[in-house]
Amino acid sequence: MSTVGIVAIGRNEGERLHRCLNSVVGRGLTLVYVDSGSTDGSIKLARNLGVEVVELDFSRPFSAARARNEGFERLCQINPEICFVQFVDGDCEVADGWLDRAIRTLEDHPDVAVVCGRRRERFPEQTVYNRLADLEWDTAVGEAKACGGDAMMRVSAFQAAGGFDPTLIAGEEPDLCLRVRGQGWRVLRIDAEMALHDMAMTRFGQWWKRCLRTGHAYAEGSAMHGRTPERHYVRQTRSAVFWGILIPLAALLLAWPSWGLSFGLLAGYLFLYRRTRRSYAVQRGWSLPDAKLYAVWIVLAKFPQAVGFIRYWLGRLSGKRSLVIEHRGSVPSGDPAAG
Image (cartoon, rainbow, N blue to C red; front, side, top):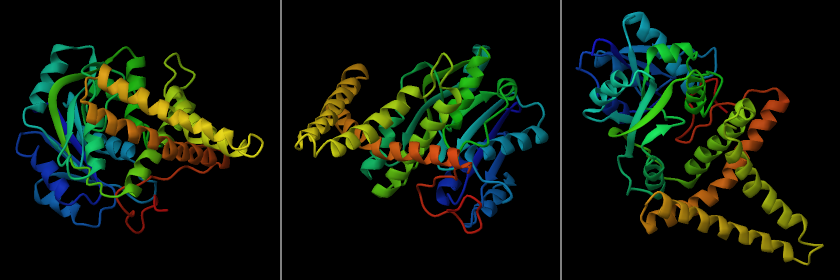
């Protein structure tokens, strides 16, 4: 374990952070917590647990990518012998046995740079949004294109790829994995419990902002890497634009000349729902109720994703960097990401 380090990031996670850090302290690991302007005592909590704390200054905009990079830098300063680093979000607990399993996987597969497993929601039945997140985490096992915020990475591969892009406010993990795979490494998702996540999402507005951030990530990712052979996020971006902008716009603009017949275009959403439901029920083997639930919200998500697409391009064309999109609540006072 002396060659393994942990980088946890968070802001105002409260009890979630306590559970997160408790899941990894006391194992002989080098542990760094990076705080992005918390006002809830998170820094004191981490230090009381004996955890090294990095406080991000307010001179530059916050982002999860920036936090992870600075945590990694501090980790290497404390222990230059680190070979593997486990990144974990402050609202997650690392599952028992995960670290050992991930280490063995990286040791047994020298061409693998990133390994991840099953992330689960702590309270999936509490709200429909938590349930959707738990379904979202249920991804296929095997070679993958990307990981999420929780993953163990090979230090040499992470450094060679240049770490996370700190300018990205979302989609930083797929961006890193794309660059890592471009250097010949593999990303592997294994059949193992990795983390327990606490979404704590109770309102439609929170879900909307989260999907808006996803749309922003699609737009920025496709703008950056869409012309590569992999066509990174091109399909997802086109889908958001087609269903979230073009179809409703065409239905409205053609309503008068078509005597209202253009509203028949909206029947396409039923087609999208059925196709999505079948995909998850048949190809992924989900239960029909789960597939139906997820399909409904996939269709609805096209609209906030389209807003995220518009937000990205408005910012890019105006020369203004997009700010962090928070879905849990307001950003702490003084945070340069506020607004």
